[in-house]
Image (cartoon, rainbow, N blue to C red; front, side):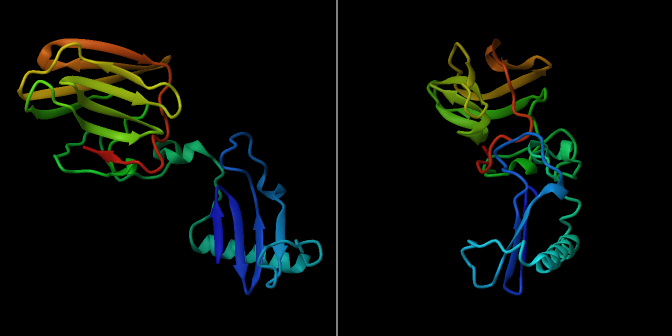
Length: 233
């Protein structure tokens, strides 16, 4: 049985275990060379992995290292890739995506879609348009949202006013709200964030009330909004 995550590697074979820690995922920076990683070896009776036997049994360690490469080649672990945040972005990582093109039409009731199953708008100029029916002038509801507490964005109604909010992890959320309430009935809600080299400008365009408000956010997410929270509407 093999293990690999962020190039931290391990192999369990016939009771023996060999492991190596390449780096800590939450500490970005210059990664060490793979050949510099120090392997540890543990015997079948050492389930707590308290006694490293790599120095006493170098032949056994080499056997398990070879076994790891066999399993890694078999299950497409190779080539090893120790990039951190780049691997969250399909464009940067160079892997295929589920979505083709730059447009997506979604209908009501669709929810909990992962980031990789919808069009990526991270750090890109884009527009989100929603057709909604407002029952009264004080409607309050999320129209569409992606992510949540740790990062993401939402187009919503608050006390009858159209609003947009962008949250970049633990920084202060960037929000803007229409100065007037939305009339009752069927209306169009639209937000058009515009990405710039100096940051991201979130430009709200409320077409039905002919109002325009802006809020500037200094930074924008480039790789991932949230680890578990999804796309909902």
